[in-house]
Every structure is written in structure tokens, then in C-alpha cells.
Length: 291
Ligand code: ATP
Image (cartoon, rainbow, N blue to C red; front, side, top):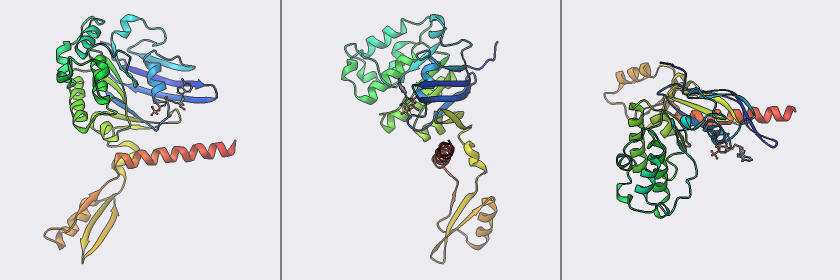
């Protein structure tokens, strides 16, 4: 068995005219790993994902997806990857059932289309035309078409945009099932809770480069950052920033039987993400000022 990663990208570059959309990006997805790519609008996420899918050309860099170069890989390779694009296709006249069955026919070892329809929560809409689905239901249909081929590697570009909270939870369960089957997944998302819930690793992209990568719990040194301990004493709110919150709480415990208003807070993934993006924007402005 080869243990080469599902995705390996080194020094990827892509320009559109003067715009350096991807500017020396490195990325890796191990077999069976779920990686979330985060970044502001225009950071280069979709461009990168579409290069990996073989839908866009690159200007420079090494790219290997399931051991092949997506720029030259053939049909056999395409059958091993699953793609959920950001914009859904124009297949409005066909029904959900027709589309999922038809799509399954493109692959050598597809999942059972009826089980896929259930898994994405479209059973009640199985006979509806794609054109009559709501935005969130349409997105679920896109996900169904992406997974019906039983891909080894799945690309999900903002998969839950437009989902209601219940549908997002159901989608997370679906991804947990795919993880269990050993599917490698690269997803882009603007939802930090989604990255935290699903991803083994998160990669933050800004201005076409990776500015931080790591387990969501550790990103940007989050675990190592100081905690804030808050409580209420003599009717006033008190707070202490500390590296040793357990010791602070233990000391408070000697003074109170129940510590009023006790909270121990660490920066959220969103706090860390916003700080990383801000720092990168400041650095970019500084470099431009020097030019
Ligand atoms: P979003 O979160 O909004 O989906 P993104 O991170 O996916 O953003 P991309 O769509 O990859 O970003 O775009 C990166 C940059 O390249 C943007 O500045 C965008 O305007 C530009 N760009 C993308 N596609 C093209 C194109 N076909 N022609 C010209 N410029 C493009």
C-alpha cells in the first residue's frame, strides 16, 4: 500500500492578469484526513480547489492528487474523486431520483443511490424536479451527486452555505460517516464551527498563501494562549488573565463554596482566525507601502 498523501501541493501560483490569486501555496491532505480551508472572500480558496479538481490550469507549482497531476489525469482518476462545486449545475428539469441514479451510472462502484438520497435528507423531495428545490435542498442534491460515486477523495466547496441549522447538523453526521469509510476530504468553509466540528486540520489562507495551519484546537497557538478567569465578588465583576487557570479557580474555591459567576474563557477559533487575517492584512499593507 502506498501511503502518499491524497493531496500534495507545493508552491502553487495562479494569476488572473495582474491579480496574484494564488501566491506560493503549500497544502497537504493525508489519506483519510479531513482538512478545512478557511479564508476571507477572494483569498484564493476556490481557485486552489478547482486547480486540484482539474478544472483550472496553474501557472506554477507541483500538484499531486491521488498520485496524479490533475492537469493531465484521465477518466479513471476522475472517477476516484468527488466534487461539490460552489454553484450548482443546470439540470433543473430532472428529478432528484433521476439525477442521483444517472450520476451513479458514471462510476464503477457507486453507492446505492436510494441510500444516498436518504443520507442527504432528500427523501421527501425524491420526486421533485431539481429546479423546484430550495437553495439548501439544492445544495444537498449537489452533495448527493458528489458522494454517490464512492470517491476516495471528496472536494466540498462551501458545502453548507444556505443550510438551516438542522440540515447542517445532518450534513456533519454524513461527513462523520464518510470519515468512518476512510474518505479523504478537502472542504472550504466560512463557518468556523464547521471547521472545528469536522476537520482534523484547518488551513487559513489569506492573499493566496497559507498563514496558519494546525488542528482547530491548536490553531495560532490557541491552546497556549492565556485564559481569562471571571467571577463576581462583593457585587463586582473580577477578571484575571492567567497561564494557570486551574490554580486561580482552586484558590477562589478556598474562599467560596460556590464561586459566583465563574467563567474560564479561552480565545475561540473565530478570535484566532480574525487575528490571523488582520495580521496578514497589516503585513501586506506594510509591504505595499515599502514598494
Ligand atoms: P470566496 O470565499 O469569496 O469564495 P475564494 O477564496 O474562493 O473566495 P477565489 O474565487 O479563488 O477566492 O478568488 C481569488 C481571487 O481571484 C479574487 O480576487 C477573484 O476576484 C480572482 N478571480 C477568481 N476567478 C477569476 C477569474 N476567472 N478571472 C479573474 N479573476 C478571478
